[in-house]
Image (cartoon, rainbow, N blue to C red; front, side, top):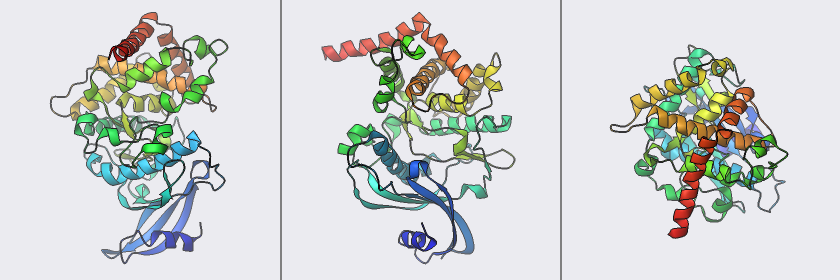
Length: 389
């Protein structure tokens, strides 16, 4: 987009009297769905130029008019992200508690709702994190000890501040965005994802179907579409025995979505396209298995140390009277690991990150007959209850 076109796009949504003195293109969004720019802005309340980051959503014009779940997911995710920054981030950000989130200056939604159920164009003007958090950790496996600990603190703070989300949310969870196949027909456009993250089962049945029950090693361990196990794991994750421990989750926690201060004492997270309801360990599962150096998990007590660090941060921040025993966290964590492997096993991109540790850990769970039976029994009890209702 030319500078003149960008300025023309932004002028109607910027504070009256603002002046863009400079703009530059930073990057193109995944699959060409838009661009990110940096602008230098002078506002009526300040004579000094301040930088902001602009995220413009413009889907490829070559998209088919037929329903495409991948396209629908992306477009819905950008609308969810705008909702998050506008309606939820102000109450969740807690700089003293270690939970920094970009502030939204302004946003727009241009165009009508399209065939795929989402606003077809969107613009966000956000705080430029690089001013306070100039260290970007885009390359996985390079986080320092201080950065790993700070990341766990950020996640614990974010999860604690939205703890028991079904009871504390200012918006009804029922109005949140359902899976894309439903949302493009009926979603009102308000709220976040009913299920946070981008790999929950209802939106990844195609990937599950690609896992052969006999020829694929994960299929032979029960992760295939004809098995009850993937559905049982997904059910247990979204229906914990104590629903009060459901919170908001970021949904796409990885090093590339983090920014740190130079001394590592503070950090911020961005890219909230898949923020929604879930268990905090779902964020942990992706982060710890994709983004931290492998030596953390290769240590004999490495997994336990990481989980306890997160748990200690979390319980210090939980609302008064709330509880989350470490044993319960481990139970939830195991489910989250299996769910993540189920997605990766059927995804065309395959496994990435701390692959050896992840595969070994999950294989051990799937070979544990008692673990598999306990998870399956919970799901089957739910099915029997539904039939009797």
